[in-house]
Image (cartoon, rainbow, N blue to C red; front, top):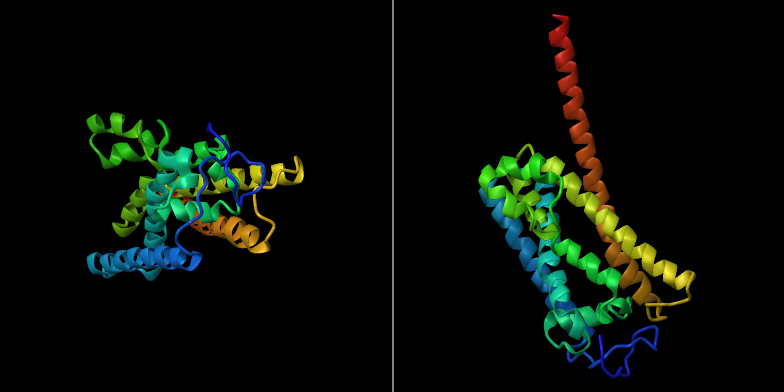
Length: 256
């Protein structure tokens, strides 16, 4: 980012943030709007899942809600940052103001920081990966997989997991495991780089008020460790039980 740095409320105070303009909406207005949007999305998703699959377990419906919410945030909210990262400080639309509010706990989102930009981009788009043969080729005709797989999106993969859950597809848990591992890895890297700079290099990215660090930075991101870890363990147990059952069945057939 080039240009003359503006006076701003972000830490460190000397960070080069060009063109900063304060949010036009209050924090309450932003939270109500964002919360209302998420509630509407989750309500509609739950209603659709219940209508299309009335026999679906409640636990599976909740899993669908989680992955639809994650996919939406990855594709749209984080996708917005990926596209507009170089002029976030002056943005006044809903997503721009939300990012500026969050950046009070991590100013790297205002400076096109290499780590957060690349990390957020990877949650929106990733390159050719090993799930080609394990998953996609079984969902789509082989001739259509190559161009798709090379442009796979982590965000849409959350929607894929939601779909596989709703349809009780056999690929649900392999795909769920992949997506949850990506969340855990990304969050761990995000925490580690910021905290290393804070405690080792003495470069704070969060304002000193405790709620910015503990509520915005720690809690909001910790959700994407706790929930993915739960579904990761769920998938490991399910896959382990399936393999064990297959092995026992094979052993019984050999014994006959």
